[in-house]
Image 1: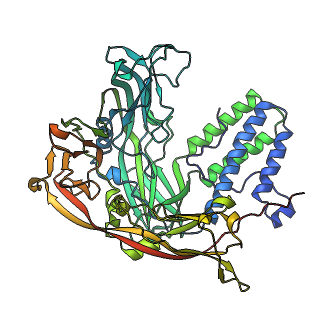
Image 2 (image 1 turned 90 degrees about the vertical axis):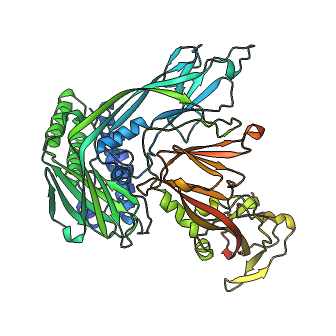
Image 3 (image 1 turned 60 degrees about the vertical axis):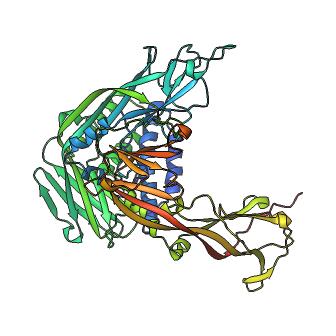
Length: 609
């Protein structure tokens, strides 16, 4: 039996926590630190290990909830925009169409490895799972084996074994950014060098996938006028319990029974989004999926545990029966969502799992090789039978019109003085499409810098004469490093100018049927002649007939030399482009960012004894 409170999202919480209070406690609320200390102390007095483990698990979860709730409630309201969590679903006519696109878009890339004893495989997914709500349907993907060029089938194992003498297929230990990557490991034989090319090569990756699609997804648009009201759509009822500046409480009831296929599957049928008065989506700060009744129930169970002196089967059965009885009465789903900004309107999307479609499929995916740079003049096809849109492209491209003032206003200055001999000042700004087109030929020019003391009024004092080795300016990285041990006086201010770089970008549009010389479309592949459209100066974004940007799968640079075109890039898209948007850097500006930085003080070492 799992006695832990089900935490659906890290950093959730809403409780008044653990046990009764004395009259003096009522006057002065007990701090969370005191509660935690008191709880940990109470655990020390429990002798029975099973009882101690159960109380520790549930009590710690409740404390975690309260800690997160305090953090969310006290967080300053600072506006931060995010993406539309439902954009993925909005592109497909039915939930099942999204499922089919996911499965039909899977393929496997062979990656270069630095070792003759390893070959890395990268499963490529048509959708990114880092959207706020992640992939919205219950799903599972399990890799089973790899078939090699000599017809040998290697079973998947969860980790590489040092004692296994054969070829192994296991999760990659070297890829932190792609946790789904796999590695084919060949045995190392002392005294026998075998080049990777002479090893049997992976030909196909086998696995199985299961995805559960809901009957439908229903969207409710709410505002302050809907507060306390219940809205209905067939078997779904939704009530807006609260709508404050930066959070909303929503409760939804499905009068139809949950489909038997998902009766034991943890589900989150609510995807709540908020817009401010600009109409933009606010990013989420955190959410709570346990209602007050649920929290009260768990608190009651914890209190019952704390009255026990030992764990018993009878007590465990009692808790199980209480839990089943409570859960059987829960016909609604509750959530409290915090946002980074002031809410104007709310969008609540309800996934109706009263009936579902379960898709199970055995996978046998060929292993493809698309090197980032190749000398092959032949263009490989990569035309997948799906269409996927890039919903982040329009936001990314906004900085194509970035001006000097916008660039300057986006700069954030940070300092580090932990190491007195390498103190740092960093001038950072959010990376953007404009940065992508800066190229490599940056000319920063002069970078004046003077350090000053502080006068008696706490203002800028006199300049400090310094040897050249006392500081280093890296204008390309926009950092200043200085050695305080070489300063004759303690600096209080740094005054100077840091160069920023701004690309002047010209936007164009061209139909696929009328491409200029140097651009060519073959199905879903855009071929770009690098002599006419060098990559450091040009970017291309594709749209299909819907007017949406197509997501790019990958790019291959061909350096064919005398065999054909000198140099050309091939961009592969999920779908067939009908229009190309072109972005050309026509000029590069150096923007002087003048600054006066009040320096953080370095900690002084205590005097030696």
